[in-house]
Length: 411
Image (tube, rainbow, N blue to C red; front, top):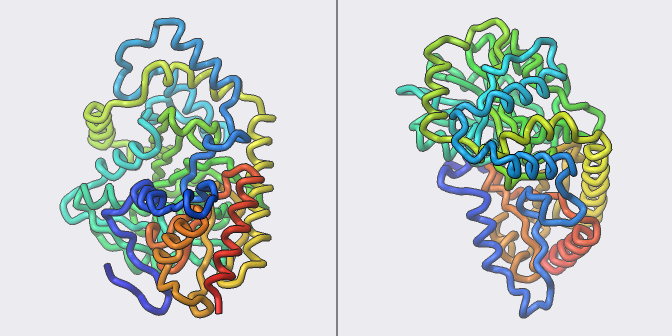
């Protein structure tokens, strides 16, 4: 792993997973000795807390589909026709054109959508441009497909915007795509319409596809509304990846999608479509009865359900941001504006006996039973990622323990 000592940025290890490192941290907690319950601010699974629960429409839709006994068999590998149609209709609400159901492929969560996207773009000598920091599954999938990974930086002082000059410098004739994650994981950013258009124009000049990870789509609570990258599909072809997991608070249902946003048809060649279909044949998709519930889920969930989630996330992100301002040794350069997590910078110069972000997180787990993800897992050494999709009492307790830990380890 090559370390850039000035900016403390690293290439995310291709062998690391968030669940793997969080498991190691969990095993390092010592709740019996310190008498403190374990509080995890590490993984973006809001269902661990009672303030986040699935909508009635989602639950009833699944129960009805299961009880009907019509969906116990195999679904078509690209997804049930009614499921593809419902997802196309849902996403088209925010687009200047109507998506065809045939452009939608139903996947086992967004993770499988990532795997399929990278697999169909892979070719000998190919490279892909990933943001730094980045959700590590992209690097892991690329390594399995022998795709070279090249990282472009996100600017924390500019709301984690893409360094478009770096993108242009990194790309060559073997570059197949660039990835953007909006709303941002792990950064908590929400890109403006103007910035997304510049990304599309850059991709057009370079002749590459934009893979738009929108698993946190619509979870925006700052000045910028969520803008889907597919709006700019006529500038550069876009593969949109998403799922029910975050907006509907059902990550365990594993219902995601890969969508081709290509109104001009520059990407939708028969060969490309056939490759996607073949990978769907290999991988299979989510449970048939979950797919069957999707039309009810996306059409009947009330807006009040979404507003409640947004209000909780805004409240908890504000609590995190305000608490961090009072903690010596950590700073947050940009207030979170969306998603469920954000990045916080460590100032090791004011800390004693803390060597780096991994050391910080393992000692925090042992002494305070608080789990936070070290930044190296997402490509930023000496940063940490804090998840705020947590109920308020647990979050406030965790932040107080974090403050005590930092005070104890500060000069």
